[in-house]
Every structure is written in C-alpha cells, then in structure tokens.
Length: 229
Image (tube, rainbow, N blue to C red; front, side, top):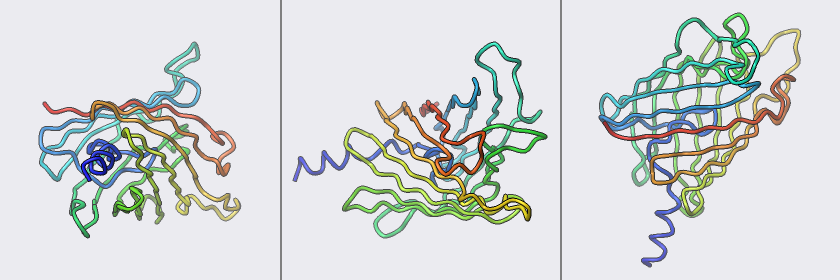
C-alpha cells in the first residue's frame, strides 16, 4: 500500500501548472505564489507570461509575444500593449468535486497580423476539470467567448515522475467564415516534465489537422517556473 501511494503521488504534477499547451488549467495560484513562463515558437518567436496569486482563489497576470526575437530578422511585435489574464477558482478538486474556474485570456497564439492572432484568444471562459483516479487522467472541458462562442477539450495523462502526456482540441468555431470551409480546428499533442515541483519543461506539436497552413505541425518549447514570494 505504501508503494502504491508513493507511485500515485509521483504521478501528480505540480499544482501551479497554469497551461496544458494552449489551454488554461482550471486552477488558481495560492496567495503569494507566482508563475513565470516562456514559450519559443515560430521563426524565433517568444511568448512571455507572468502571474501572481493575489488571494488563494484569484490569479492575475500579463503576457506578451513577438516573432523574430531570436535570429537576424526584424522583430515582429504582436500588439502595442501587453495581454492580460485573470482567473477565479470557484471550486477546487476534492473527492467528487471537480476544479471549476472562471477566467479571461486576451493572449492569442502564433502570428499576429493587424492585431489578430492566428489562434484566437480564449477571451472569457468557464472550465471544469476532474482526475480519473483509476488511470490518473485529468480531463478538462471548457466553453469560451471571444467574438463568438467556442469550446476546448483537454486530456492530460499523468505518469510517474511528474511526466504528462497532453492532447488538446479547440474546434475554432468562432473563426468560421462563410467563404472558408471548416478545417477541423486546432489539435495539439505534447509532453511535459515537472521537476523539483517548481520547473516545468514542455514540448508540443501543434495544429496537427492543418487548420492553418502557416502553423501546420509547428513545434513549440515551453519553460515555466512557480515559486512563492
């Protein structure tokens, strides 16, 4: 029994993971806890995030992204302002009670032309998540609104050693256009590893369905850290 408990505890990642790949995890940082993340993408692109737990159930932060930051090309900034995110943890997972979070994200992903991101922002969202104990699988379902209603689905398989196998899907219903056929939405797969319960490294292969020709099967690298003040 002791060995089983140790094995299960090793399969649970650090509690301050705020994002699977693109999708937010429905949790909040605790009071005085902070999160800093860095994503490398595209042609030398960089996305930086910082968030802090103002209260045990309230997290607020900001982010900014730009392409060609690394390399010899001229940097391509996204918007002239930083993006904001906020989330309130309504429920925390305990027993039969799932994680339930109400949040807002103004950060989109990939290229930004005329202040429009290739992968549209989540905007206002409501997300629920629950761990299937027998398989240590975290399942999440969310609905969101940003210039139209949309949703997202995530499966995060927890493995021993704080390793995660992640699949997430966004149907991109709020980007449908009359003269453009639906191309299946955004499908991403990734793997992540958290060590010392503070530092998380992630690799992801995104847009496997080819929802956008410029981002089809693109690779990203994520690094994040969480700590207390």
